[in-house]
Length: 319
Image (cartoon, rainbow, N blue to C red; front, side, top):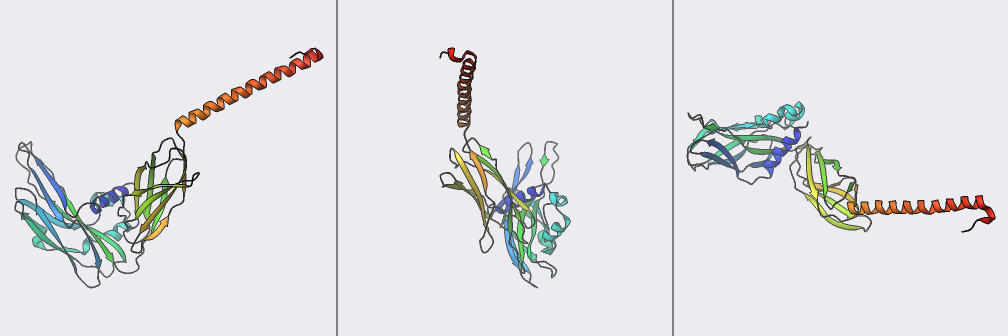
């Protein structure tokens, strides 16, 4: 399951990118040629209807000065990560079989600077379970390999992500698995590692923040806002960052809050406590304790020596 985070990262990239996505097709040679395409929209969210074909039009543009052959097809989750996802989850997500692309749109050539609309049809099977189902429509430029040995051809794929929602018993739910923070820091910089699990059956994009309170002074500090990212059902999102809006010294309480779903459901994590104590204060305290220990030991030694002299000399003892 370690590579699942890579899948989430790929999804995040799609979901946080602009409406027009671009792909660079590097064909570097002695003259240094380069080709690229763009698609819009790069993300489509569709609420599926029973016994109804849903359609979505995607515009693809050739941004180069040359003709560019392009292949178009639908696939499920990222191919390189399928083997790392349990089979039941893979089948649960994969809606690529719902897609139909017309024959004339599966393979075509775009003139330089030209664009073309591709209409994708999506049909939900009766057996589809409520919640989220996912697929991507791939646009793959085809670059012919040149005769020169110095010519290198790259075949990138640009994906249009489809988030398909099937009506029914929709469950939106997230769970904080852990907020990992150190128990002691010596600066006003705190590294954190937060894991959020999607325990529902539909994709969520939680708005998450970490509340910070110094408990001795009972003072609130600016909360740490976490960049919202999409998390697919059954998977986990891992968020790492550094909070620098902290007091110079004290004990801080960290509480993680997330709002998600159509009703903006609020959920909170268990509190975490961190001691902020700079090195110079630690060193000063250790020095003071050492001096105090030496002082006490010195006073005690003098008293013990004087008591021994009193016992030995009796009435003849002189201070």
